[in-house]
Length: 87
Image (tube, rainbow, N blue to C red; front, side):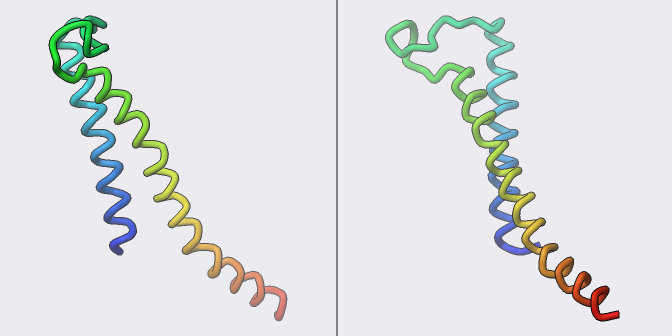
């Protein structure tokens, strides 16, 4: 596994970790919306913010992983097509 993939997989893992942490803590609070704004309640981060960050991180990380995989396969496919034309 190259370093490019490792960084993208770590971002994907972090996205799922944020999403899971946010959902577990938000369910512990009975899915309350109290305290989303800082002036609305205690000065702590609301679990919904972690859910939002996780949902925002997952698609770009997956897109990068898929695009790296596709970019590696394209030169091989082009070479295979050239071989078929020569025969």
